[in-house]
Every structure is written in structure tokens, then in C-alpha cells.
Amino acid sequence: MKIIAYSYTNPLLESSPDQADWGWEVDRVYEDLGKQESSGHATRTQLQQLFTDCQTERADYLLIRRLEELGDTVEEISDRLNQLEAMGVAIIATEQPYTSENYPLGANLLNLLHAIQRQQRSRRIREGHARNRLDVAPPPGKVPYGYRRGKGKYTIDRSTSPVVKDFFEHFLLYGSLRGSVRYLAKKYGKKISVTTGRRWLTNPVYRGNTAYQNGETISNTHNPIISKEEAAQVDRLLRRNSRLPSRTASAPRSLAGLIVCAECQSHMTVTRVTQRNQDKEYLYLRSTSCPQRPKCKAIPYQEVLEHTIETVCRDLPLAVAGMNFPQLDVVKNSLGQAIARQQEILAQLPALIETGILDVETAKLRAYKLRTEISALEAKLATLPPVNLRSVAQAVSIPQFWLDLSETERRFYFREFIKQIEITLQNKELKLQVIFIF
Image (tube, rainbow, N blue to C red; front, side, top):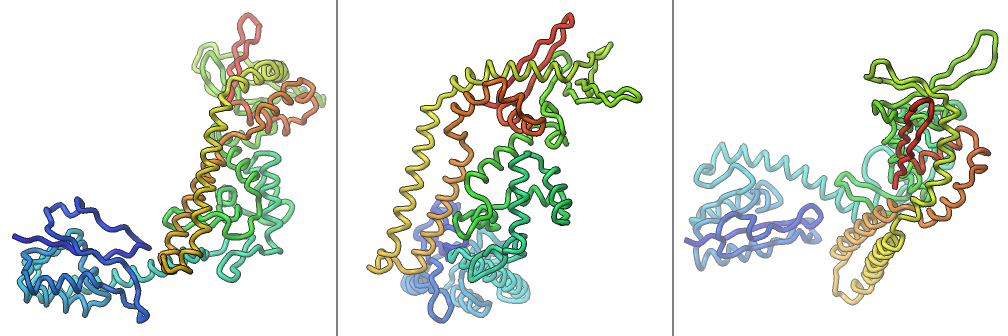
């Protein structure tokens, strides 16, 4: 018994199947890649070779993944099925409910062929999108606010981009998504939801990159609204805020969301107490859901703040000194070298086209893969801590630095370094442990 297999693969959409993917012991595999003739039809030279070989030595079974791989139109597919049936070759589709023994040419097969026609239409649309990706063209759909479509790429809209830029600058300054959304509505009358604001902060388009629906991203495709350094800082702020309780990112007090009671492990909230006919206010930290009886006592906010500043100034330089910076440098250098190697290969492609080693379509596909790999490496590099962390730690270890800041500014710096603060009140003595994020 002789078993053969045939596959038609468009490299823009999928990869060729491995020998093990067929699930059978195959005597020979015929493979065509999705090259296009000037007429727009795909070349299937290996399929023609298959027919020639079957005329001289008949095969018992032909394995294919899907019937549409046999042709570009329903007529071509039907004609080739007829030819194979006339030669006595039984066809088995591994990804469709079809075998030639169960589907004789008739009504059932026609229904399947009509379904194939719809799939081919969808496939042609996806192929068109894939070719646009090779040309680094923007994906279909609405253009992000702040941009408009130019000649094959996004171009900055000078009338709306300042609004987006100001939104990012406000977020970088205060680290509050909700606060930045309110700021936008107040200053520009531009009302967006918090969800939209979060999409803006993570949208690759504002960083000069283009993301496609297949999950791949190509960097440096157009002019960005924010720099790479600003984008990395935005990502750090979002990661930092995700660790905090809901709605504390925009809280006015610098310790909000960071304090946890060491006794009951409950988060503590800042409460404000005033006296009648007096302007002075008193701030306390209270447990939000203390299970103990009696409940944990409230602690004066100012006392905890002073202890926090004292602890940070004492412990932060020691924590940073304990980090393995040489190892971090090795990782950064390795990623940088990998990016440089990919860029060198990318620069060699035009010469390979001129010498005829690569055709234009293959070179475009290779360039696309190289750009997506470069983008992935740059994304990894952006997640690493800044190289000047040690010098920053020395600067913020001075108590006067913290005392000169406003509560909003202190909130920003606290959350840059602190993951959590655990406090205990024993015999009226406050004990505090600061847990840093690194």
C-alpha cells in the first residue's frame, strides 16, 4: 500500500506541516509554497508532479490537510478530485470531515465545496492583510486618536496629538490613570473612560510601533508621540499600580495603598478627622477589614510617614547594593547584541535582492520576521530596571529630599521603590518594615 501526502502552504499565514503531523507513515510528501504568478494564481508545481507520478505508479491514499489546497477555485478543486478518483486514489482530508469513500461526487460534496468557497474568500482577505504587514502598512480599522492615515503609515495629527502627549505627561508626573483622565476632561474637554485611558497608555502606536491582530508588533514604523524612555516608565508605573488596592493610585496621600497591618494582614486606609469650628485636620491609618476583637487601633498618619522616610533613607541604599548589577548588565548586553545582529541581517537584504539570491517576496517575509524579532527583544530590554538605580537610591536616601516633596510627589517616589509597608503597634511603640519591589 502506497500513501502519499500533499500540502499547499502560504508562508504569510502558516508553516509547512512536519512529517509527524500527518499521523500516517507516508511514502512521499509533495509540498508547494504560496508563490504567486503574474495572473494572481498560485503555482502548484509539486501538485502537477504528483499527478504525473500517479499516472506511472498509482498511489492508494492521498493525505491533504484541507480540500482548498488543491486549487484556487471550486472548479479547480472539483476537477482535480475527479482526476484523482479516476486514477483510483483515495483522498483523506486530515483537518476536514472528508474522505473520498464517504463523499462520492454529488450533493454532499457540493455542500462541502460551497463551504470551501467561503473559506477561500476569507483566506484571500487574510492574505491581503498579511501582504500589508509585509509592507509595514497599518492594519485596517479606526486610526488611534492623535494620528491619521498617511501614505502607507500613521502620521501625527497636529490638532489632536498635543492632547495625547499631555495625557501621557500628566500620567508620568503623577502616576494616576484616573487623575490623568480627569485632567484631560478639565483642560481639553476631552472625555474618555478609564478603560480608554488604559488602552492609550499601552497602545504601541503612540510608541512608534505597529501591532497586528496576530499578536506581532513591528517597532519604529512611524513617528512616536512618546519616547522609548517614557514608554518604559509608563509600563513600570502600570505594573506598580497593578499591585495596589483599587482606586488608591490617585489617592491624595503618599502612603495610601502601601500600608498593611502586620497583625491582621488587612490593608489600611487613610481617614481624616476634623473638629467643629476648627480648620485643623487629623489623619489616621485604620484597618479596612480587621477580623480581630477588639479591632486594631488607628495610628497617626504623620508618625507612620516619618518612620517610613527614616526607614527608606536607611535601608534603600543597602537593598540596592544587594542587587546583582553585573548580572543585570550581562542580560542587557546580551539583548543589545541580539538586536544588533538582527539589524545587521536586515541591512543585508537589499544586496541579496540585487544579486538574485532572494526574490522580493521572500525578502519581504524575512524582513518582517526580523522586525518582529527585534521588537520582541526591545520589549524585553524595556522591562529591565534603569541602569542608574544605584545613583537614584543615593539621592533619595537624604531625609531632606523627602521633606521637600509634596504629598503627590512623595506618592510617586514611594511607589517607585516600595512594594508594601507592614506596621505593628506594641505597647504604644510603632514598628515598621518596608518591603522594596526589588
